[in-house]
Length: 168
Length: 168
DNA sequence: TAGATAAAGCAACTCAGTCTCAATAAAGAT
DNA sequence: ATCTTTATTGAGACTGAGTTGCTTTATCTA
Image 1 (cartoon, chains in turn purple, red, orange, blue):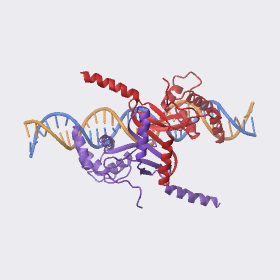
Image 2 (tube, rainbow over the protein chains, first blue to last red):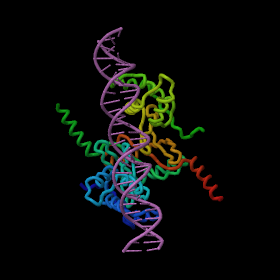
Image 3 (tube, rainbow over the protein chains, first blue to last red):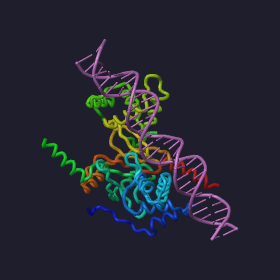
Image 4 (spheres, protein in one colour):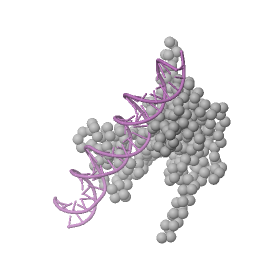
């Protein structure tokens, strides 16, 4: 199950929690229990996730003290994006988040069959983007590149299914 | 106001209306008045638009017979995408449409200040995409590439504003 | 032209995300 | 350590995009 294309983490001086505290202080905001719970939870595993998952995990079946309400989940997610800790993207009209802090720039292959997001890095892409921007006197600050298609796994699965149909 | 980067239209054998009729027949669907009104309206000007604009233009201040209801606007937009006449993309959690039929492949620069979408073509991008896909045994079918930033106009505007502030 | 049935329109609904506002809890001051 | 100020939380109401159920209307076929 080892992925030869898995991205390396980037070394950073502060933990996400510490970085977030920096950010909060710089904005005159408070370091509260719900904010701590959320960031702890979010950075404990490295997957793409959406607000609903978080709400599920932190509002409903969560024992006693580490509950966070729906509005606070949304509010804090926005702060984490604002603080540069998370990156937000829209896929199929739904917001999906991933780690940004301590993680290298990358783009995604999106399998329309199993909804899996596969990450990849391409320095050429950024060059290409900057070149296009230059041509249009456009000041590029970020980009979103998502390739839709079918992943290896799902191709195999549908080939199998197809063969079975051919026998009929 | 002539844009040196404006994309050329692609020659097509059928008008959008004709293509849509083909599609509808092939699906055993009916060629109705609302569908006719909608496609006529949508292909009469070449801009990016969203469902709300259409609803506004076709439900409210529209004289008598060419009214189309909200659900029908949404339903027909989906059909037009399905039929390959329109292309749909998500920007800021909102669906935006543009002509696909009779129009070349392209990607977008998105000005986060004035919300303008600037089109550009880059054959290299598709190559790059296919190359990455190949590396991951991924069967790519489409992609979405949006570069966020500030357009030329808005850069000028904010420079002007900045200068004014500097004088204070 | 009549009859079968797809589609339109209305209103009610869903779902993600936001807002209001009373109650609570950080943080600095005492 | 406690008080006071005020940001933040949480509950529920709200919004806005998009969808659905259902009755009526209109298109197609024979």
